[in-house]
Length: 249
Image (tube, rainbow, N blue to C red; front, side, top):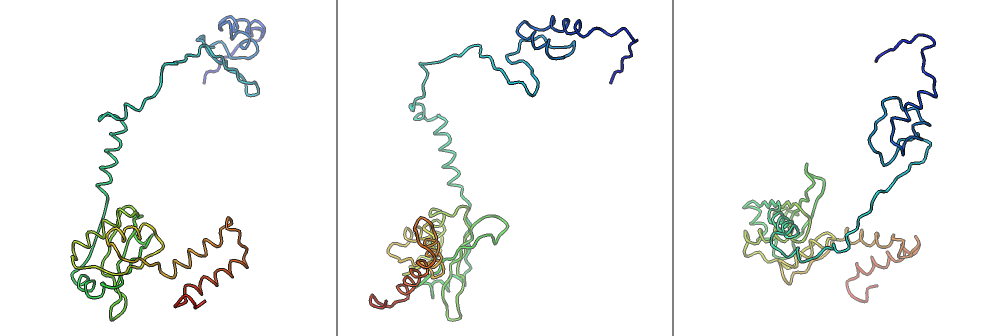
């Protein structure tokens, strides 16, 4: 900070000082220089918009607008081998081929799968059980001592392609494994993967997720059901699911 001391009577009159500042500014900004005190070091370069105070409206001056009527985008460039579109697609396909997949199965689990996994196999997915946000799947069978996990796999994406790839690995490790039924969560990805790798296999939804899907459907506003109608319809749906034949309701 520089402190300048002046003797009394040596101050320059305000009108003279503003006139000097106005003379240093460009012509289209001289009025602003008169109205505002910018000091003697005002820049002399051309400005499209003058510096104003907070309460003053901004003014924008357009010098020139250039148009290019003959310019247009074409899709022919996307078909070239070195186009950015094809390069991005190749990079995406390469990432798809490098998907993370971890499949684990011990020899004793293979024996249990071959002995108890020819009828019903259960597939269960867990979330937020590991340090990383990756879905973890378990394959279980019902043995003579309860339910046992016979295989596990962890994939990067929870989609039918990743799940089907894990099932194909288990098929290669257990060539004679051909179950008749699968029970899964209410997940179309899991069901599509099972039907793709095991043609003719029936995939069932467990009671918990079936009831959860019903409740979610009944509570949606677009279906227009009040609380009483929801309970009544849910009761009938439970009776249909629990009936052993078509005439049990």
